[in-house]
Length: 525
Image 1 (cartoon, rainbow, N blue to C red):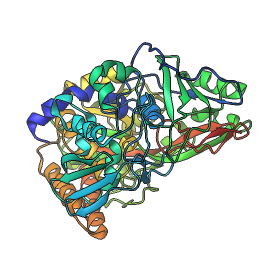
Image 2: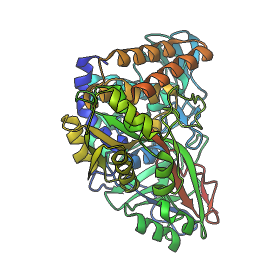
Image 3: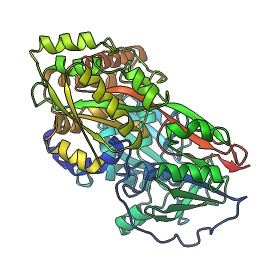
Image 4: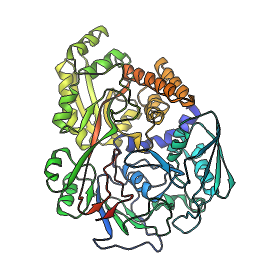
């Protein structure tokens, strides 16, 4: 991303903080009204109630929604031409009748599902699709989704139900990548974007009735939905319960039928009453170094602090085993997993040797981290590991917004934080560009412009244009090896996400490998 576009997107970076800090709760729309004619509250047999751990940190407009709860809600309200299966993250047709068809190396076409309508009853047209993509690509809108579509040159309506995409260059991942763009009704968005952001209108199986910050989101089934995943409950109520103990209590009492983000220490007890399952996620706990400050401009110092960590102890003690030590930028369950050439096992002797080779003695570190519950449990063990090799470590724990203000101001040395861009897509190109292209390396950890940065992005560009899978995977592997060796921003572990649900009350429920819950294809038992 060039400097001009970088500045355009700088305003969107603050919104992305919610995502990159494990989609932490900040603030959001205070309260909204109801859609005309939406269904009211239902009884126990037609309503699904859940406990959600994050408040409304952003609005719902899918062009820029980045908070955990708005993103999860949008998956029920909106459709893309292509959507990702919430549990497997595999691409499947959404509004389109099939995955986009390749016409030639740089041209694709997609056909809309016949009879699809938005929640106001208006038909979904090719014009709406073109509008949805063009507003993302318009730099004035500073859309977070634009960074995922750099290959897209133009979109046009061939007829009322057919859309044609022109690419700037061949991009083999195109059919799945278009899932980042949700289709919105042009007339409604153009009339009042702020109202749409607060109470969205889509074409999905559920329509949003109301959304109240720090309270609840209410949904009703959209009866005119004609896609493959119709609502199986008349109503849904998502109770926003950020307090872990209150969330567990709601699950135990039967007030809700499912909760996300089960506290690790409560999982075993809760499992005696309901179903509890931890799913391996891409979700990172990463170390990020300010590479503009000495001695962290020396990769040996960054590597030393990774080797010093007793990650297995950290996972066992603070996370009750719900994580896997990083052996790559990707989690071990990822379909394109490649073990990095550098794996940071616990090796205090090697850590000390690297510090000596770098000429660093009596290193003092202030470790910046967020106040996310499980991260607060991990941080003291990181300090313990670093203190053990003679690195005097002070913890600075605070709210995500305040901590990232320090990061964006350059007033930090090392940060320990969670993040998970896999909510947007699961391909390696998307996952790597989130942290290693543009905004993060240029504005947050000062790695942009280095020879290694340029090499990584060159490898990603070549992989994006590669026409065969073997070449693409080889280039991605080289990029993973390089970011592991550099350790400018690199995972300590990949988190497992524990979810609880009453399998006697819900039918078809599956825990997710990303933050949030999916009630698509789920009914009351």
